[in-house]
Image (cartoon, rainbow, N blue to C red; front, side, top):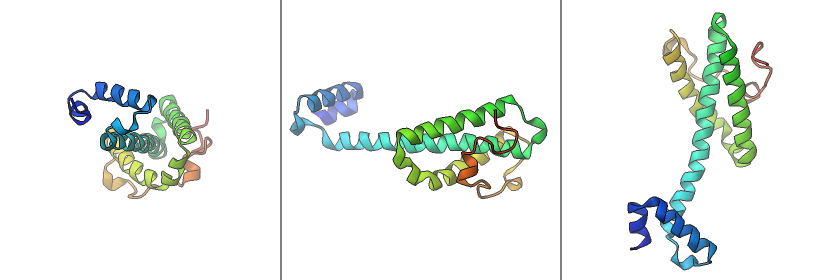
Length: 148
């Protein structure tokens, strides 16, 4: 069975086969096209995780700002957790820093959806562009009252 057929029919077995070939130095036997695709996919997953976590963080910052009477421990803890996980993700993948501005734009779109889904607010009630700059997004003392 060729590697390409195995890739399509039994991905897990294909991965084991590729690892064995890499470790034994059988580089000419590698399924290079699919291997390159999978490595690229791993990088894209890191970008997606950054965007998703920013979406949750920005959504909770918006809820914190727009619904002061509902502020609570849960929102505080979500803001703290997302900041910590984003910082860890960037620490482990420093090149993601160069993607941060774009990730904030994409994450903000998800944040708007979260706010509309979880509050009485609608899209027309919310700013079209992220109202927070990068320093605010990662400032553990912003907004006032979030710090733990």
